[in-house]
Image (cartoon, rainbow, N blue to C red; front, side):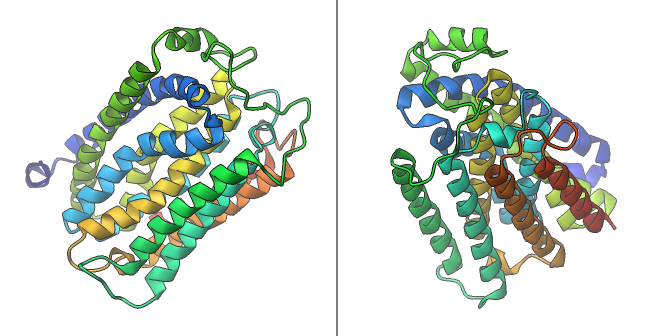
Length: 360
């Protein structure tokens, strides 16, 4: 497919594939929000852990495929840029979701120990990626040792978060605007007056096994667009002369971020605030692990040493945006600047700055 697109010089076909993939991810992600809200209650994991692990995995499938295809096609800059570019764009998604919750700042309503710890986990993973990039260029069986370290760090972090979420030493002070993650008695939509309650009630009528099957099927449906996007991105880069950093970080990153963005907005409209934040932070943590996937599929050496200054600049930008988000979750501003919190404004400004530097 890539060769035919490139031979035809068809920028229009590449753009068409991007638009089609966007439509697929939007439709699938809206449905996943309803299914995930019910499954979070039935599994007993809660919105934060379920959202970060299962939502994060399902919404990251397209990004995983994009990274693997790009790395296997000897486009390491595209693979690396897609992984870290998705993190920056997905963090920005919380600012978009904040517009849809009018009672208070989203980070105020969704503050929890688990979400804060997932933010710390994300910062640690990004730091490991940077350490690997500036460390020795060595591989074992074609894979950099940092890949194994990042997987172990992620799994250890999950266990720590799960344990500390059950018996936390830190709790967010509950206010009139705090939305507490409590399982719904009917295992349908979350408690309270929620725009998606009726949809949640319909979902709750199905057996848990059937819900898992539908959740997995929709996740694979979303992932199917990832392969086409990766192929189209390489064709667009060849046709326009744009850098791998810009195409991977901005174009692929935005498409990669669509599932988390739509899921976060849909969750907010259902009143599942903790799930909205957890889906984005958890998806971001898994996107860092996309670098591990890319390192495995990239056979020319270490993927961590393939990126140029643009990709490393983007990694540092993702670190900054995650730090701003953590600050918002800690400060918990009830009413922010305009219709969003101070962290939302800063996230928008930082992301636009990153894109401007990469573009020019």
